[in-house]
Image (cartoon, rainbow, N blue to C red):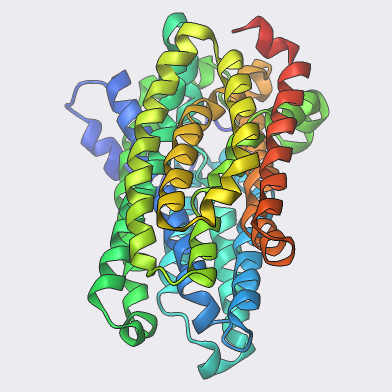
Length: 442
């Protein structure tokens, strides 16, 4: 197992990061929080760039052989592959971490993520190469999923573990700020390109630029995170908190119950995540006359509401308890799931209400979802267990949400999509009920 006393290979990026640290003051808690936010923002920017392209681009460029609805469903099917690949990536990269160190793992993972993302910018269309275009897209998407698993650096868990007792909710929400920030930047970029270019130019070449931007952001994020990960004081903190990688088999064998509960506890917020980001964009694009840029602007404004709600979640969790907040927000999401689909189909005003209310609920619930992950694990299995739990929660809660919601809506009407969201809320409430350890620590 790689630790501070074990000689492991060092990448050139790690050496550069160490050189930056020489002669500078030690990294403090504020810097680790900034590193976490930058890292999460880069990952979510990649995520949303691909998600938006799954609606606006890939059905026409890659799945042009199908009608718009079928093409979008196929596009969402490929979108889900990254979530299927994430647990496999955790197995692969946990081995890299144990044998070569956290810095090597992070360098490989973020470079794979950057390359897989920027490669999409060079994707040929179905009209040019036929089914090979679909195959290439699948390969790149799986590469993104594997890399996202490897990008787990433990900094969020480290931040939560070193938070003051009365500030744990506040520190738990810090990593979640990356989601709305990443969405705002990705949506703004696509809105600008969509508004500035003709439909023909946008589909021919304009959509490719956000994927180049994603690669550049990944490079910045890599160095920012290595700046923290390679410092001796944080290496010591990682190890003293038992944030060291165990094997996946060991972790599942000893902490399977906590993995299951941890995966289902944030399911309501993870299901809502795609129900207010990816799914409504696809519905509006397919079934209304609204221009995509108009809805992207609504999404940007709503994401700012979500950003404020994430911050609010930290205050509420510290005052009332994380378990209470997750339970109440899950109940509110359940209520929202009953009437929200009707709003989405009620025109521009309904769309605004759907998005603003949805993002407010998402921010409050998603803001504390990372706090559920590391809280239950024994020290020896906390690092790998947290990664596996995150993988499972995204897979079950969010991975198939867009394709399921769109398929239900197109077959049975919008109201049926609320059933998927309601099921997530029910799973969260059940997980919190059974999670006695979480009840004792909050």
